[in-house]
Length: 126
Image 1 (cartoon, rainbow, N blue to C red):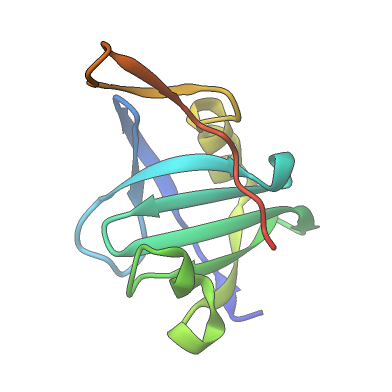
Image 2: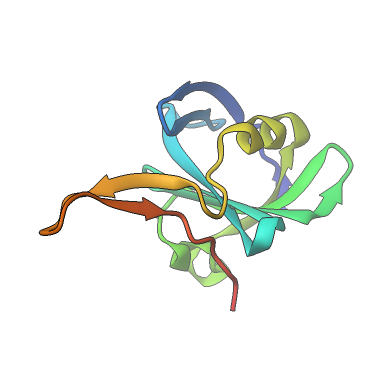
């Protein structure tokens, strides 16, 4: 385990969670998604990705994999520079309040036959 990552939710902007990451100048806009049938949370945003493992609770928080060099899933690999950190429980509780869950409406797309609703289908680790 590398360190405790003192991330904080500083606000909500529509579907975006505004997150302050220590030693980073800008506030990050991130979207939160339920993952692995509720066993994990993925936060993706401006050159940042964070996967919180809700099954791995430790004193003061949860174990998470974090990378601020890219926002795609491949950046969760240690080869791409991801680090294991601990995120505070208060942060996780605030994220749970606004994250997308399986079956949530995430948008409406135009199509030839009329508007098409788009739902979040959930994600799985293979």
